[in-house]
Amino acid sequence: MSLRRFLVEPQALAAGEVALPAEEAAHARKVLRLAPGAEVELIDGQGRRAQGVLTRLDKSGGAVMVEAVEAAAPPSPRLVLCPGLLKAPAMDLLAVKLTELAVDQVRPVLTRRAVPKADGGKAKLERWQRLAGQALKQCGAARAPEILPPASLAEVLAAAPPEAAKLLLYEDEGRTSLSQVLPGLNGAAEVWALIGPEGGFTPEEAAQAVAAGFVSCRLPHTILRAETASLALAGVIRFAL
Image 1 (cartoon, rainbow, N blue to C red):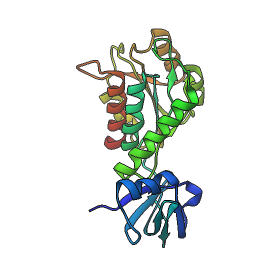
Image 2 (tube, one colour):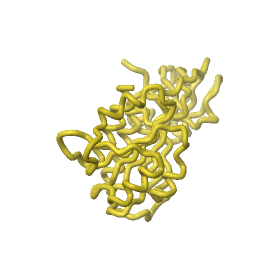
Image 3 (tube, rainbow, N blue to C red):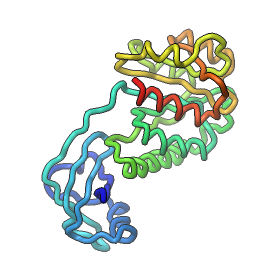
Image 4 (spheres, one colour):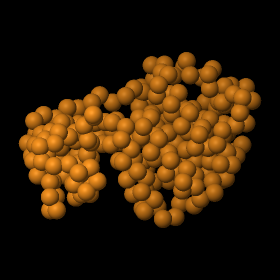
């Protein structure tokens, strides 16, 4: 049986006795029915993990005795996914699944055809981060994606480093497929990928991205839902390069 994982604050994870956050301690006691002496794993969501033993677990909280902390090497290339802002259920799905796919950073993009607006920003961002943390404990990855607030296309394009490899997944691309572009990504230290919302990018937005150095490409055979396209592209980049 695999060790039960708990998420702690980055600054809290160190050798010695580590306090469990209140929610994690309550989950360990009420749901998992653990008791002092149980072996557990702690992760901080930023690449560090440790094994330890529960030393205290009661209504007031919990604590774990840790002997050593290990730092996991980040995956390569660094992957920044920039999906067009989607409706709440689809964005919730991305927060979970992009964690499983070891995406480093998620930058939701406000586009012309995006259905939702950038309202309730703080609450939505906190929800996405909470879902990513839950997914992190389940899948055993060392890092959760950094999920940023929705930003305009112009802001996202300006943020992409000049040296990064840049992809634009565009359903109206008539010549270049993703399979033709992938070999050129081998050896890239960082990849940025733009994926449109439910209605896709407008021709003007696609041209704006290409002018900023993004290579336009398409998926063959079928047009995927926006969230499916994001997951497919993240999976291909993370596991095929």
